[in-house]
Image (cartoon, rainbow, N blue to C red; front, side, top):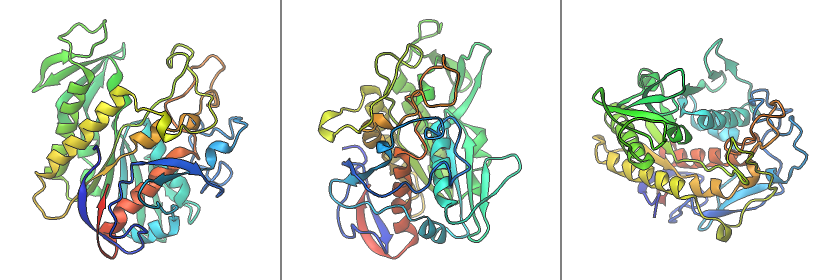
Length: 359
């Protein structure tokens, strides 16, 4: 099954020591704990994701926690996270959902200590811990350009210089990409046109999304495996929840509860992209020359598919005729759980004794 990567790791406080635990397999269960932060306690929330401030009336979506089927996933501990990564640098690399994730972590950490923000970059420094968090914009992860009609031209064999030129500055990098690959695009390899997306207006040999995505992920992971000295996490594709139409056709997402595990199926394209990410990571691990696993999977696709209640929908601080947002996530909201996965995936590397965990 996707995400079934068995690694020999270290751990000191994990509650699933010596247990085979697939963190991605689970369900959302009620949780009485308050969120780790709110719009009153974090000034870094993107106004487009600040659902409470934008008038969302219900709060039930804030009171669910992710419960893996085979273990407990401990609540995120911001102080412990900062202490564990004292002196380290961490970057989120990807699209707007990568930025959402980065801001979620930033909000959680600033409950311990406010951060010093870079004058013009998305970079924050926590002085007491000598810890730096950055967000790098790279929506496709490969080199690209856009024309005036928003046709994307992707060089599928060239990693994006926006992150390759900075990657060595970071001890940990969390990569993600997804929905930008649904855009109308032309695909190049070795500076030669290979084909284009399936959109009718794209005049080129048709190449399906999954084939393009596989080439992209192969390029990205090969570069990471052979050129990067740090620890790389690949966060799998998220899931949207437009109902009664797509984003530009009146689609909405006004549900107020998660789906039960038995009641949801991951959409086919998302499941295929998830599979590509897991398979390309496994292939790339064979290229790693040193003996330490530096490629790790954060498999969030299943858990995201169960949270139709977690999107901004109409509560996105935009004019009334703007499309609803059923792709990005409210902050605080379901993706705060992703920080738990980051902590408990990194923890074995930085702390304690051996265990075998299945991520």
